[in-house]
Amino acid sequence: MAGDHPCEAVLVLSNIPDAGGLTKAAELGIATQVLDHKAYGKDRLAFEADLHDALVAVNPDIVCLAGFMRILSSEFTAKWAGKMLNIHPSLLPKYRGLHTHERAIEAGDVEHGCTVHEVTAELDGGPILGQARVAIAPDDTPDTLAAKVLPFEHALYPAVLRRFAAGNAEPLLLGM
Image (cartoon, rainbow, N blue to C red; front, side):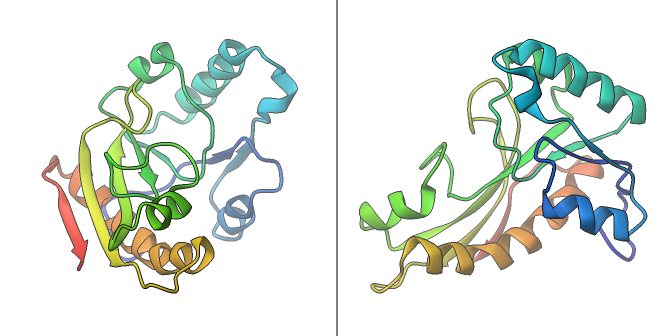
C-alpha cells in the first residue's frame, strides 16, 4: 500500500507472536498487536470476541487477512461482512483449505495461482475479487510452486484492495 494507494494500514494484528509481518509493520511505524489464539485453548468465541474488540478499537474500513490460519465463525464473519478480505494460495473454488500447491500438482493441473476473496462463513468461499495464474512446470514441487505464486500474491492483493476500497468488486485477473 505504498505511494498513492488509497488505503492506510492502521494495525497489523497477528495470532502468531513471532510473525514476520509484525516486525515489518513496526519498522514502518504501523501499530502492531499480538492476540495469541493458543492462550484461549479451545474457547474460539472468546478469542474472536477479543479479536473483534481489537479491530473495533482501530475502526478499520477494511480488514485484510493474510496468513491468518484460523477458521472464523459465522458470528464473527457476519460482524465484518463486506469489509473483510483474504488471500488464498489457489485458484478458488479449487483447493480450499490447506496444502494447495501439493494438491494442484497431484491433480495434474497445468496452472495454479492465488485468489483474493471476500471472507464469509464458508471456508474460502466468499466472492472472488481477483486471481493470478501461473503455469505449473512438470518438475515443480510444492515449494517451487509456492515460490512462483508468492510474487503474484504480493502484486494481486494491493491491486484488489485498491479497487475494493474504490467500490469496485469486479474480479481482477493477473498472470497467464
